[in-house]
Length: 310
Ligand code: NDP
Image (cartoon, rainbow, N blue to C red; front, top):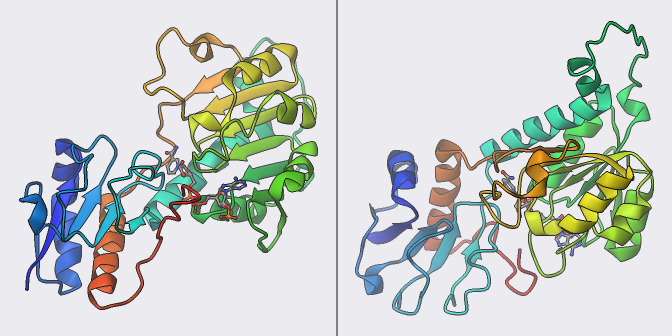
């Protein structure tokens, strides 16, 4: 029996994913037909990415699961026509990319690199930066990406605190959880990295009140999602000096409109949602393995909890 897999994403992604997905599915020995078009009632699995044309899952009567190509699922998680399991992407390449991006921007702040790039003024300011062990970094979100980032930062010697919804234990990382834990996680943080999903519970995690908990002059790195931060509160905190600088990769509206104050703000670095991306070769293996598992009666990996939204 053939397993019909619909690739429901923008056309340019098909160019990237067609061959790696076909190869990974072949490697799992699944007898498959992978296409960008099927009659809905013939589809067994949908490989899904945001802005897909598939918004109503009702006609997909024999659908077994939707496999999201991205880690973030906010575009599909609330779709009430979706009645089958939804999985999100946990991909080695995506994780490694995020580690590298966060590490680079953390080191920029830690080493005070901007001061030297922009401060070539003939003055010999020979103050060496502290060691990483004397720099407190907090990672909000300790999932697939946050935990890996926290461990990598700790591996370089940073004094790392992490925060999540449920209690965790991670080597060399002080773990906090829940609302009280957030206060503890922020109160000494010199650099804060946001790797939370976008859900109703995480919206405006950084707001006027929580930004004020951070030590004056702290820096923020947000590769998570735009709605995690109250933009007006952040702009006010930057203007007052409470927050020294923010590096923002994600925004409530993307692309970030040209007139948005973040673009011209001297204390903001905007990057265009490039912190990390799903890598076709490794992500295809994850998708293929999940389909194989489901067909063999094994539980799917990385299933989204629809009630929590991630
Ligand atoms: P996971 O689902 O693995 O982890 C989410 C983490 O956030 C978990 O530790 C979870 O806690 C925590 N969390 C969720 N809700 C709350 C809450 N209300 N309070 C406290 N903690 C909470 O996600 P990933 O690590 O895979 O990805 C994180 C996000 O990174 C994605 O959702 C996406 O938005 C973003 N991303 C951005 C990219 C970019 O290029 N900019 C690329 C890829 C992802 P618990 O462990 O207790 O469940």
